[in-house]
Length: 257
Image (tube, rainbow, N blue to C red; front, top):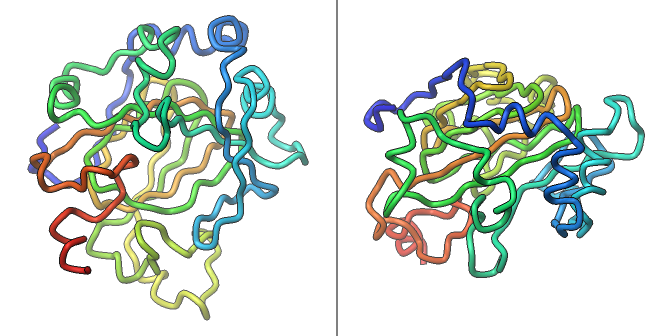
């Protein structure tokens, strides 16, 4: 991945170590992580929104989360569940697969083309994402380059370039346009003029998402992904207390004060 090229790239046919094989088994995941408590996003609807927020957080055992996500029918009426891993101390620590889920961390490996970028001083976080089928995650952007590694299930990803930000009705890093396929033309008249780029990720696929590219993700089936972030700029450019990689750069935040 050439960090100077600011466009998304899809890589196909990767293995991510043994993760695609091992994480295909619910029994394996229950054996390794069943009693672990995790904080899960829970929404009554298929569409998760951050502007305004329409979901709540619920702490549950990992095996219970699996029942609500990987074992959930696409036609279930119980609502949608979504795990976005956080640090062991969520007020001070970023998500890190090795620290948060050491039982399965060794299963996952990045391909050599990005592994060198996502380590050392440049490495920021690694996020485990587990979601119900038909779960739509709100459109947002990140301040750091990252790769979305699809381990299990299928995801649809729709993206927009930073040059279309004024058409996405952003509040902070999140868009107010929830239903991107059927937006309200009266509330969001500019949205129809934004150029969208779309791809589908299957197990073994990896999507490079450059910083500031807006993206909307749908779990077409129950899904497991690992999202790895790294600093493409030097550390002083970022706010030191940014735990999720979505805060304004330090200079921008200072200018707004």
